[in-house]
Length: 188
Image 1 (spheres, rainbow, N blue to C red):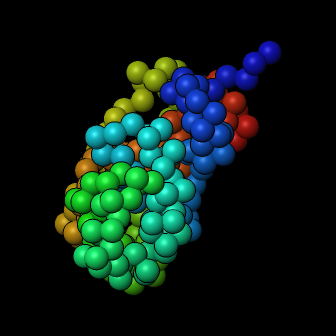
Image 2 (cartoon, rainbow, N blue to C red; image 1 turned 30 degrees about the horizontal axis):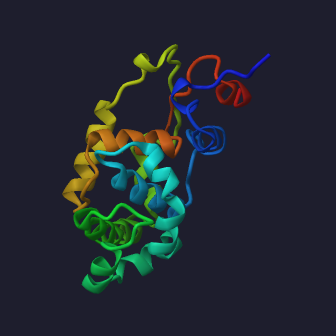
């Protein structure tokens, strides 16, 4: 008998691996949280599979997602990366990645870590939903709007409520695995 998975991940092996091994698993490591901010922000207007397939390019272009190194990147780096086919060559998103790294570091300094800031929005708890179909999974929630608004106030770009909710799902603040999904069943 085949194991059931969330419908959205069935179209490629990359999606299945991401779904099974990362999506919805709680992340408290700042560098990994920064990685997902970079990747989710890059996704704006694109498909997630496009970003997954360019993940290694992002890793190489942005110093293995080290926010301190990224925060120190320059206009020359933006020019260079705007020509790099291993990432999405959108000048605004590349510049936002550098700016977001600076915002990320300010938050980490203020709260002791970015994870402390981020997880406080959910009282350090995972919100487990039990959607039966993909149609039952929201694109945005009031909490995503609250987090996004606060992050925008702190200077983040390309991080609206829809991207924020995808970030919450990716980093495990929200468990939106469908009822019957092998990953949800394994976590019980």
